[in-house]
Amino acid sequence: MYIKGRERRLTDRYDEPRDLGSPPSLAEMESIAYQEFEHIPEELRSRCVGVAIRVEDFADDEILDDMDIESPFDLMGLYQGIPLTQQSTMDIRHQPDIIHLYRRPILDYWCEGDDDLRAVVRHVLIHEIGHHFGFSDEDMDRIEAAAAENA
Image (cartoon, rainbow, N blue to C red; front, side, top):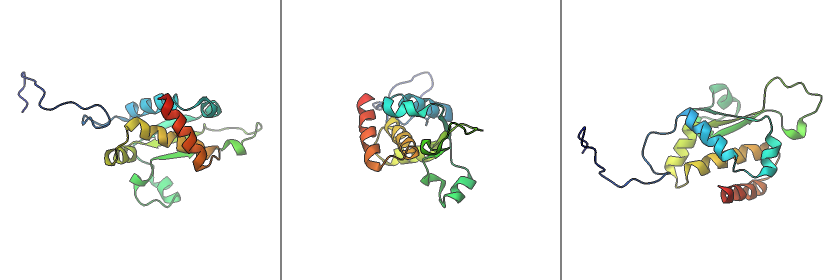
């Protein structure tokens, strides 16, 4: 029971990931993403100069249609840009490479699982960066394990 002016704790407060406060805003999720990016091993981070991280609630309909994805909850992240293996020093870049993180699908995945929210965000970041560099799933598993040790 909550009586205004007589605040008292009715239950124990649990640490994240199961703190049932309000979900992080777009700005808070972006802050989490940049903080988790700092935990990614230097061998990977150093190759991401100029890559922006953007957080949006969902991918837009055009992206979902292009990828043949029916539900916007099925896409947690997306890399858009020119992979390093295809870049040339002679290229004129019109926009930066971008990693999109989709807040609502990430929160949905987090709510249904047992993982820490930061671990989910870090996993999506590593996955998007890894595929951008042509890493295999085994490479990404190794990088993710190293990032978890540094967190």
